[in-house]
Amino acid sequence: MDAQNNGASLIGRTLVLIYGMFSYLIGVAGLAAIIAVLAHLMPFGFLTSVQSDYPVLVNLLLVAGWGFIHSIMARDRFKGLITRIIPEPAERATYVLVAGISSVCLVGLWQTVPGVIWSVTDPAATTAIQLIFGFGWIYLLAATFAINHFDLFGLRQVYLNFLNKPRPPLRFVKRAMYSFSRHPIQTGVLIGIWATPLMTVTHFMLSAGFTIYVFIGLWFEERDLVRNIGAPYEAYRLETGLVGPRVFRRSRNGSQQSH
Image 1 (tube, rainbow, N blue to C red):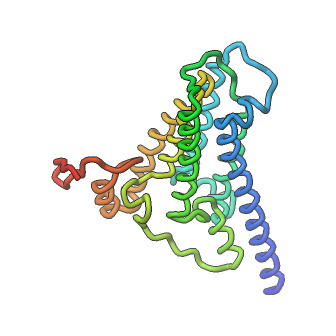
Image 2: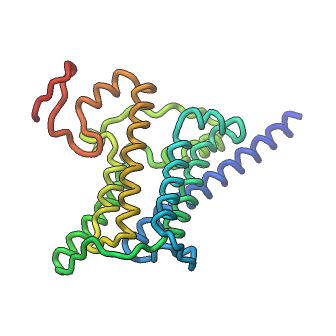
Image 3: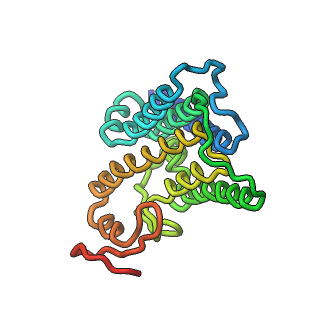
C-alpha cells in the first residue's frame, strides 16, 4: 500500500512538474509575442483576418479583459480559491499559463486603428530609440533574475514539489535595481511599450492600455506588499521610487528631503 501511494504521489508530482514547464514556455511565448509585435516583427492582429467596424471598442475590451485577468489572478483571495481546485505548487504556473495565452490573444486579436502619432525618420535617432526599446525588455528580464526568475514564473514551486522538498519562503531583498526602484519589471515594460520610432494609433492604444494597467496593478500590489511584509516594506517605500529612482527621499514624518 505504501509503495502504491508513493508511486501515485510521484506520478502526481511529475505531472505538476511537466505542467509547470509547459506553462513557463507559454508564458515566455506570450511575452515574446508582445515584444515581437511592438518591434514590428509581427503584425498586430496576426490571429485574425477580420477587421471590426469598431476597432477602438474591440481594443478597449481586449486590454480591459487582459488587465482584469492579470489583476484578479494576482490577488491572494483568488490564489486561495484556485488552490482548492489545483495543487498549490501549480498555482503560480497557472497564472503564468493564463498570462501567456491571454497575451498572445491580446496582440493577436488587436485591431488596426488608422493614424500615426509620430514617425522618426532620422537614422541615428531611430537607432537610438530601438536601443532604448531593447534596453527596456533586457532590463525587465534582468529584474526577474535580481529577485528569483524561476519562482516568479512558477518553476521553483513545481521543481521543489517534484523533489518532495519543503519550499522555504523567499527573503525580502533589495539588490541590484531593487535597491532604488520597487518595481523595475514594470519599468522595463513602460520603456519597451513607448520606445518606438513609429507610433501608430494602433500601437498607442496598446501602450496606453498597458500603462494604465501597470499603475492600477501597482496600487493593488503595493497594498498587498504592505499587508504581507509590514514595516520593512514601509521603510523600503520611503527609500525608493515606484518605477524609478526616488528624487526626493520621504522621511517618516512625511517631509521630503533631496538626495
